[in-house]
Image: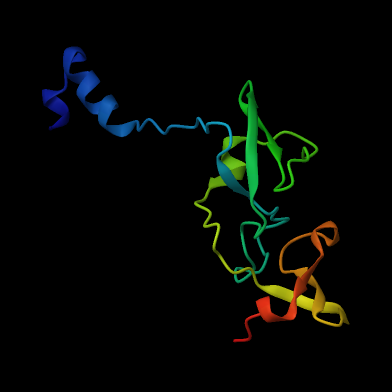
Length: 131
């Protein structure tokens, strides 16, 4: 449409095409990842932008969300929808191991990649897949 053809009654056609409605509602129990903070314009681009650890949406409080970790413990703070990325989780997914902390007879104490030390766990040696 040329500018000379623009009239007030046709204005809605132009503005409705430019604005896009993005749904920001995340229902409870949705799995999400958190955005990692970038401190400046010159941060390394090869560093990840999202956490490896997944969280679950507990509830929405105004325009922010309260989250739970995988154990069901609440996460301190509230998060805006722009800081959350919805992800699909597979219960049969293999998790990468950051390092083996200890060994005993048939078990290994492992630190999971991207998870805090509170998630360290003993797993059987037979469950470890070497790649």
